[in-house]
Length: 78
Length: 375
Picture 1 (cartoon, rainbow over the protein chains, first blue to last red):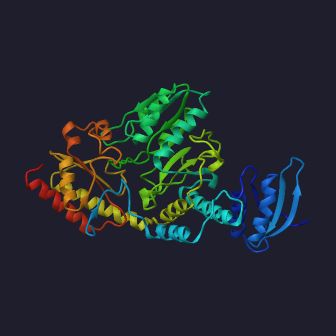
Picture 2: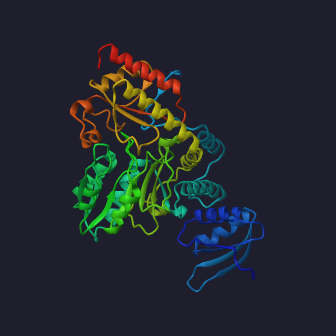
Picture 3: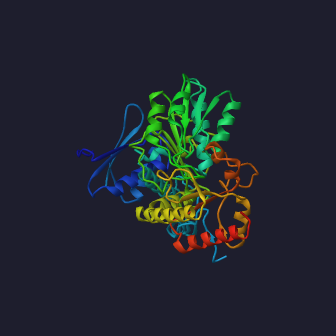
């Protein structure tokens, strides 16, 4: 679990793959190393693909939790 | 034709080398559908989203999601009018368009007429500016949308988007502007302007043909015109034109303020010389696109165009979408020009690549045409 509050947040619910991952990676590229981006993504294909896509771009997932409504919250280290 | 003098840049423009370079690199080196979830797809999606973000920045959109890629300006205009009116028909059935709009707005308004909507056409003054009082008077209960172009494609006259957009909003309508001619030639920000929908086309500002965009302010409800996928937030299904979007963004980024000032100087010099030689200049001189000159003379514009064309100088007698029809320019007619002034009109449009020598050759050749008695 990451205790650090996110520096940036993005609500990517409703954004299809792989555009959701692309948006997250673009935002991470704008952030300083060590800063934290929090994203919200849908269940299903997004949670199956976005973490791997983000990690393939050399970013680290700090937190991955499913919210009661069904969507997912990811915290990623830039 | 290496010595050709191309002065028809309102029709289309030469590709900027920077736009060509980014597109060529993508075409040659990469494959990937921006909707595929593998790494190649992700790379394509990244390029597409970078282009979207760059264009959003260029037009002052609050969010990249407000940029929807299309195939060009005509499609953007159709999507704006048809998409908004169809999606909001429960709120009203009336729209307003100006008399000097591009055919893709006027014909779309006619299509909406066939679907049970009613379109009012707002007149313009002798300089091509939308008549504010008439515009205000046309709104009524159930007016969904008003569409007024930012800059006219034939005479270059610019409308006041703040004034007209505020009027539309005060009467509960959304405001659309066709900004195809002004993007890259005027600075504006939709964060500051009362505009809900705006149309763009890449090839008018040295980008590739076949791609455009529609700015859709967040919360503006549209119906798509085509179906079959979730691309572009469901508004424009179809495999994304990633290379086109990259070229569009590169071309938009390459347009510089200094080039606009230089074009303005060239334009003003040409206008001064035309007036000195007795030609009439049509449109507004104060609020005018930096690259547009529209002139009339007591003769035949089509003959002048052909005379110039044979000598490698390319100008237009109206918009490219209309100049192959034997109908008079609806723009000049709406401005109240006489039949002869319309018949004897030419449009000369510069680009950032235009140089003084080319305008000198154009002017000398036009005078030669006059001398041989063709005027």
